[in-house]
Length: 314
Picture 1 (cartoon, rainbow, N blue to C red):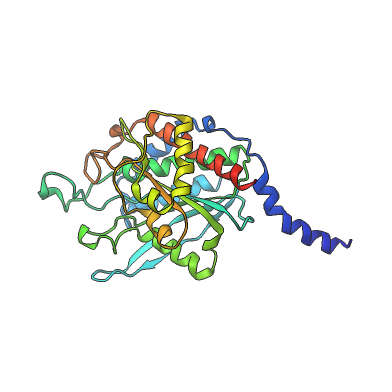
Picture 2: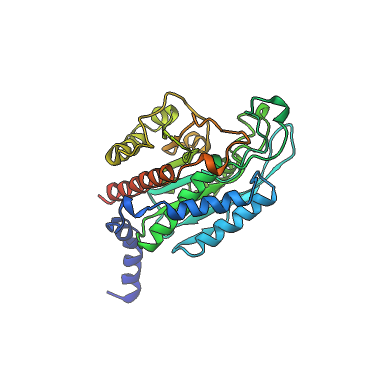
């Protein structure tokens, strides 16, 4: 057999070999300390609403973390038109492990931007002031996925995983719901459909508002209704670890960054604590978050990654 033919065969089977490797990583490898450090850094940038200086600082920080990981930092930016307002500029931060694998990839996502205004404050006079820090809403999920990226890299897990930090999840006033929300994830999906690569993703898991004190993080009802098999696998991981911050599926259904993938036919689920009492208020600060919740959610997401990798290699 010629060397060229042998090379073609190796190229054809390499993705399967990578996918079939047993990852040398366990859920307990996510210790949480690094995630809490990332959260402290994100909070130090202040508001991170789309287009703000803090948003830019957060993007640079996330890039610096990913640049120390084994994989590929990708481009995902552009604008989204929203009727009734100016186009919104978007820049997602996107990193791929084992980018050579082109099928059954797992995408983990969260949003890093913050609400521009605290329009859930009881005092309506505050609804158009600036100052939402978004420690839990926007910060906790981002911090968790940054540590998870480091763990996968340090353990050389080589699992085909995309991590996407979505911009512009909630950039406009509530009268623009839903057309003016989840713009980062919608832009990401639109671009993958346009280039014909969306079919690479076998499943999507989005985490949002997951690091609060007394957290009760669970799947929402849209996940169960629109991605039942995938949601069952996530719930199995939750039950396997049996950690206090995780719970049975919630009784509410949420529009979030997973919705764009669901609408495009990709199995997508959301883990969220929508009962977090400081959501979209000036009180969503670091002291309202809990290192233990951050650790437990991170371990659960890592278990989902491990389980998905094993099941896809069979």
